[in-house]
Length: 211
Image (cartoon, rainbow, N blue to C red; front, side):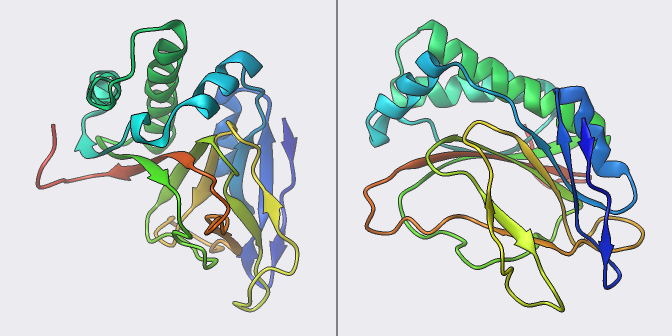
């Protein structure tokens, strides 16, 4: 694990680079605004997900108990018409594993889970989410972009998260000081013909509706 623990103008800007899922707990250390697991996804699996027609990519938006994530991911694949395969099984199990790790990090009772298929410039402005923390993993397409904000300005240098690499970002509701000075965005893809598949997990304490 590599830890870049930094504070600039009273804001946490460090990025902890994790060697494994367990190392994502670096997000809790002072001065760390994000934790990035730079894993390598199997090339054959990546070719499979990249080759799927956009209309067959699974989509889901739900608040649920962490132990229901695997079933929800499987149901989303069923609804999208994805045939049973080892590649489909890996996607389902990976979503469940990331949810389990994120739940442990955040001690979350519930999760807000999104599987988004993106073909436009969604959330192209740099921002910090109004959550405690958020896990983002781009399974297909260009990864989430991030950079350091100086006095609230847009980042001058932009980094792109590798496809398949889970990224945990502090939000504005992260307890304690200093606040995060790391902004992120969805990369602009309008007109490129690219389709992204994005997993987003947020911790939820007291949902009104959950499964």
